Image (cartoon, rainbow, N blue to C red; front, side, top):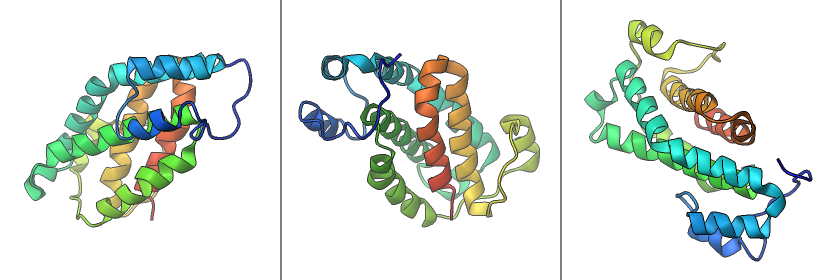
Length: 190
């Protein structure tokens, strides 16, 4: 656990700025995480969370994409839909993790989410099967009233957040949750 509260972005810390820039769209390597820990020894909990998220990333993302494709017939409307969806969800996870390490939600929003939302809005997303939705998504919360093109995006990233809630230890989940929620809010918003 951090010994002191973290305030402000760590992104421009001189000893980490180049590493953060080089790591855009991917997880930090073990060597980079070791350097982060040397620069910010009081924030080992963030290093631990980043390692946990990366360790579960493949299984979590694949399970989310598989379940979403059971509900939404993306493959019938878009070429390479599975590969593109998997790529997009992986980007969100990698950028969210890097943003958590930086303590910089604004960077996450500006660097990835606003751009990705613009791209996603260019596509027509199919309505999901109500029967399959009940079987697969097991709606766990009061969902906001969304337009049809927003619903599948909301479901995807909500499911991602819930999947990580199930696999991460509480301290890691607490660090990552705000970033997953920002992704849901921006990507599925108007």
